[in-house]
Image (tube, rainbow, N blue to C red; front, side, top):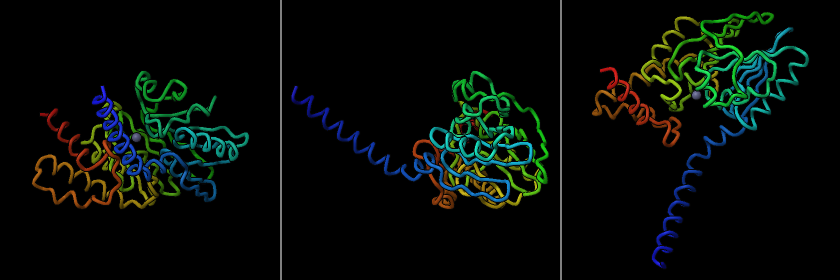
Length: 282
Ligand SMILES: [Zn+2]
């Protein structure tokens, strides 16, 4: 009996150490996810970065567009800020994709039009709850005049999830990319929500051909210029090269400073997914 106690205590101790280590390791990422990092307003556009996915609030005289509604506490903060700005103007919500850190605040916008790409309702419910269900599935694209700005909401296809949506502001030459584009953070690639890693470069080409971009608002991380698109094309090309030939370990070093999510996102994780997809295609 004593021996069992000793073993249990030892196991508990090890588990506590592992858990503690993980919390320390993941703290910067958790902090970014759990609290709004920055609110940046310029004219009629407000960027609300961090606290789940990055979000935008764009105002015109007759409409306010919210791009991505965040998760938990920050979702409520975003909603309160959006309400303050909108006053009596109607709100249109756009979800770049199904993940809860981008669309977990939909529930606050009761009665608003909520647009997302095309997903199976059952999948959305499982991932995000019925209370966060969009009111419309966008098949192609939608262009909305916003005073002197024009906004295009575009279903750009399948890569990060089954049906990824981007939002382009023509006058500002600005693209809200959702998690298709992350700023030097390894991507989370979840096949359950439809991720096809090998499609990322295809979607990037589509984006480059379709939009004249000056500023990218990535799904997570700080805002950046269009050059990030080139960096990401190179990333996926390098990861594919590594998936086909693991003697090319030198390619990994280029991404050593990128943010990793333990168990979910890293060079090894991206390579693993590409290998599985390549094997499936054979
Ligand atoms: Zn995502």
